[in-house]
Length: 243
Image (cartoon, rainbow, N blue to C red; front, top):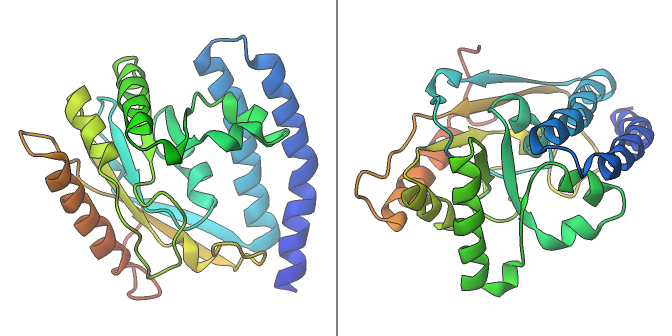
């Protein structure tokens, strides 16, 4: 039955995706914030439909840690879920994404409306320069920058290699770094069709400030907080409080 519910989720979401991504083409000449507000309604629909079809909900802890100043979000990456949910936890932000995603019909059109920083991951130092230059411009204009420091989705209880590009950006832009832990992979696992019912826990951590520390020192601190907090969430422990 849960497999059928998961199929229903995708079947129902498909026409909505085509609608919003087609709308994205029309909106491309419009101001960034207008495009962003319209296109994230797709994510709102997707999260609502996910709850209806698959019984998957979510709750957030620690939103009081989000500062008023725009900064860098360093988020654990386990599924596609967090790419949508972060839009309703943090102020307007852009994501660092693989350039190839913008070439995907329909999906790429909608993604382009979200003001992303598109990079060629194989470009090495050139990709880092793009993140630093474009990311600083976005932050100075009041946009947060969302980075998944592991670069790719990792299974629950696993950890990838953390890149220091996000902390290097924070140092250059002189802005806070906000770490985010969650257990979305428990319910929406990597490359799996089936979505399991339950409640995803998201924890927003206290901001890290550059304060003269190096990018490697900052990413080590962020990684330690994220991985430690992930181990304190279900299925490894019970979360006692929610907001």
